[in-house]
Length: 193
Image 1: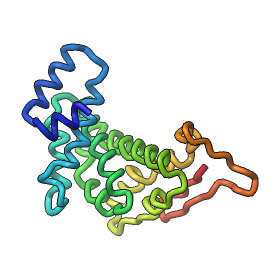
Image 2 (image 1 turned 60 degrees about the vertical axis):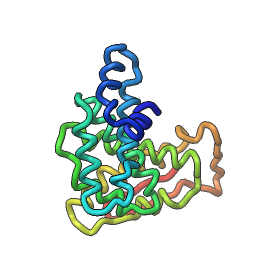
Image 3 (image 1 turned 180 degrees about the vertical axis):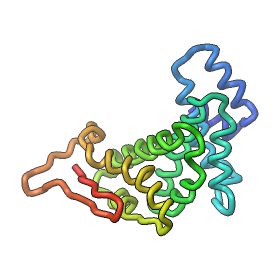
Image 4 (image 1 turned 135 degrees about the horizontal axis):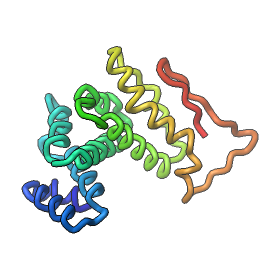
């Protein structure tokens, strides 16, 4: 919450707060930068998501942090927020993809944020159809379609395929009459536990 609050209310304090957390050697620095990334999605300049907002968000997630680890956590936080808010509007998530992959680990960090958001969604709404709809979204452009498969479909499939790991608080038992399902797209075959 500190990173989200700092970025939202006092963006000029992000660097000093990050430095202080590093000096204190607390194991919260990654969480701080993840919160900064989440807040980037909600920045007033990006609320309408018009024009260059997607590129601006990704650029800020790259530029505001000082270290590689901080950048990757900010990108994961941005992916997390963008996925949770736009799970019903995959084209908005898709608009971030062309701006990724310029730095080492960016794709993995973004995919991790997407997977974490999918786990939260699945935990809160186990049988909700929006995760399946997200998997079925198929971008038209070839390179974007490949990136969609890598950065969105694969992490969401991992969450859906390992549902029991994420459903600890609300156990769901499958009977023989309720077999696992498979979702097929042109890019992915995803088994849903």
